[in-house]
Each structure stands twice: as structure tokens, then as C-alpha cells.
Image (cartoon, rainbow, N blue to C red; front, side, top):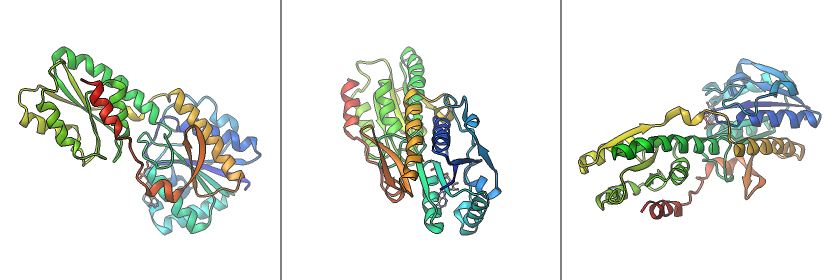
Length: 323
Ligand code: ADP
């Protein structure tokens, strides 16, 4: 390997820049050339590829978003698109790739790597924390902190007006943000897609006078068809419990932005270094993961296909701590 390409793809996440910085500098430290690919897989197809020196990644560790930009790219889903990507990449002299992104981005990497026998290392960059084989993903901690701060503010209104708030958080089909966001912000309940029956338990909770000893209630709801989202749930509760003054807040894209937390910067830096070490060790088609503070290599096939288990005991923790 002489020249390593790097791209960010799919949904952006805080810490992606810290990852780009770490990959670039570790690669240069080890004598590799580095090329930055703009707009995810799209840049491979449109040939937007720029040489990266150490100064290209100066002063970005603290910035949210991604300086390489990100995009969703339909062409890369087709064999013709991937062929063009391969041709452009080899013409540029790139002979290995580091992909920072979520489930979709790593699925694309996996297919491409197997079609062209191309060495790719992935890094889990997503606020959703939904990649199997890693305890956390880059961006998750920052998003959790953003949720916590937002819920703290909503709590002021909720308690002043004695309201029941449903706050919808991101997570795609995973409940990590809702569950841990609820614990961090002292919410009364979390509704997550992994445990669909919880929707009915909510009615039970409210029906049992869930608000008796409190003057406000906050329920975090993971965005998902399975939960019905905050709006859907609020409708149900309004019908069944008209005595409650119900409000809905959808946190939306504030969850994806902002300066990365210390944890995310450290995680991105360590994983970035590990991605180059992986290539040096001859690893390919693996995602860098972290398990009990140890960096590990997870084959793409495992990271993508398996559903990451969620700690169901935490729902009970929420219940106990909100009496
Ligand atoms: P994320 O990486 O955040 O999960 P997406 O699911 O949107 O985001 O995926 C990002 C990009 O990865 C897609 O726009 C597409 O270019 C590529 N991709 C996703 N799935 C596949 C696939 N099955 N085959 C080829 N490319 C894919």
C-alpha cells in the first residue's frame, strides 16, 4: 500500500473530523500518501479527490460535521457506479480506503471490497450507536450530551406548567439515544423500538398515576415506526388520558451537530490511528470497534448484519429512579 484514500459517508456525526485528522496524520507518519475524497462515495464517482497533507487537517478536531462533506450516493449502489469508482480510484493511485460512516456506508464498503478485492477499513461514525461489535460509535456521546442539555431546558417548562412532554430523539431503528438520554436527563420513561410492548406499558404507567408525586413528566421516544414517534404516542395518550396536558418536542438535527465531546474526540483519534495500524497489519474489510476500552477488528459481515443488543435492564433503572 502506498496511497490511502479517506471518505466520510452517510449521516454526519460529531467527531468525524477528529477521525479524518487521526487517519491522515497516522498515515503520513507511517510514510503513506493520503487523498481526501469529497462527498462520500459520490466523490469517487465524480473524481473529487484531493491530496491531503498534515496541514489539511489542522484545527479541525473541535469542529462538528465533516470537512470532507458527506452525501448519499445512489450510483454507488449499482455495479456500474462502483466500476467507475474503482477506475477513478486506481487512476489516482489510491490502493486502500478508510471509510467513516454508518451501517449503509459500511455495507457499500463491504460490497465494493469483495467485488474488487480492495483493502478497506471502516470506522463507525454515527450518532445512533447502532453498529454491532463496538461499545460506542463516533458521535454518540456528543449527541447524548446534546439531548441531555435540551431535555434539561424542556424540564424547566414542563415543571413550571405541570405538563407531560414527549421528546423525540434520533436513533434510526435503535433506542440507545432514547434509553441513555432518558437516564442522563432524569426522564420518567423511554420508548424504544427494541421493546415494542413498552408502548402499552406507557399507558399502564400513566394510568397508575405516574405523575402523582411529580409536577412534570418527560418521556423520551426513539424515532421509529415501531414506537409511533412522539407525535403518535402523544395522540394516543391524549385520547386515553384527556386529563394530561401533553406536549411534543422533536429534537431533530440539533442532535447531529456541535463540537464533539472529549470522549468522541478521543474515540475518533484512537480509532483513526487503529485504522492505519489495521492496514499495516494486513487487515482488510474490517470495522474498527472498541470493546471494554480495547480496540478490536470486526469483520464487515458481522458489524452490519447483526442487531446490536440493547441493555434492557436500563428500562428498569429508569423506572426505579423516577418514582
Ligand atoms: P449511513 O452510512 O449513515 O448508514 P446510508 O445508509 O445513507 O448512511 O448509506 C450511505 C451511502 O452508502 C449510500 O448513499 C450509498 O452510497 C452507500 N450504500 C449504502 N448501502 C449500500 C449498498 N447496499 N450497496 C452499495 N452502496 C451502499
